Length: 126
Image 1 (cartoon, rainbow, N blue to C red):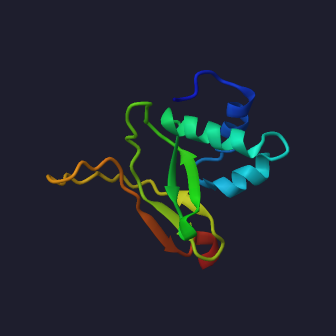
Image 2: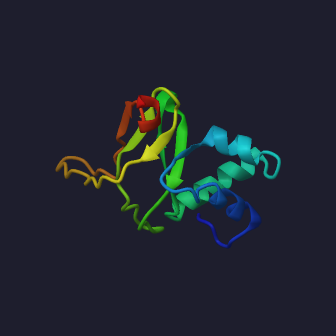
């Protein structure tokens, strides 16, 4: 099940991802939008946007779920495969502009991969 139509809830969530490659944790999204949407609606819309190939999710440090905008994905295929970087100092998470390919493993049907790189971001290194 995906996003069937554009609603106020969808618009409010998508507005959070206009800044570019930065990922946003589900906790941060709930904090930012709690005055406008209830938590259940936020989770439902996030799932629908992911199903439609608009957003992708991955697990960060401490298994916290993060979301970021997809590029070139569709409802039937997530083709935007790239690593993510999480700063161990400030906690910021970015999508890295590095293309990756899912390896073919003859004995397995691989659907997705997740690569999380940890370290200090440019601002925290300075």
